[in-house]
Amino acid sequence: MSNMKPADELFTVRQKIKELQARESELKDGLKSGEFETHGDFALVSITKRKAKRFDRKAAEEELGSLSRFDVETDSTVILVEELANSDAA
Image 1 (tube, rainbow, N blue to C red):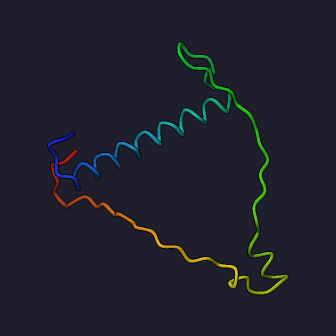
Image 2: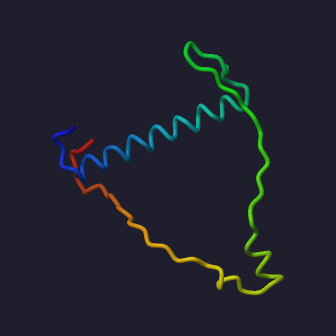
């Protein structure tokens, strides 16, 4: 628990997540390129490649016409967090 207001704490958490994701990208790039060792003191990294397929909607619509009749609408809740100007948080 924190003594920050929930909006401020959420903002701070998201900032930390961004920093961690940036570091994760650096580490993954270094591991994939062979620049970094894959063995650590308490972890071992295995690198495998996979092939994936995805549906090319644009190509399908060019051949078949509109596919909008297959679209499914869903509801979701989005929480946006913005830093206040001149904030002393974080």
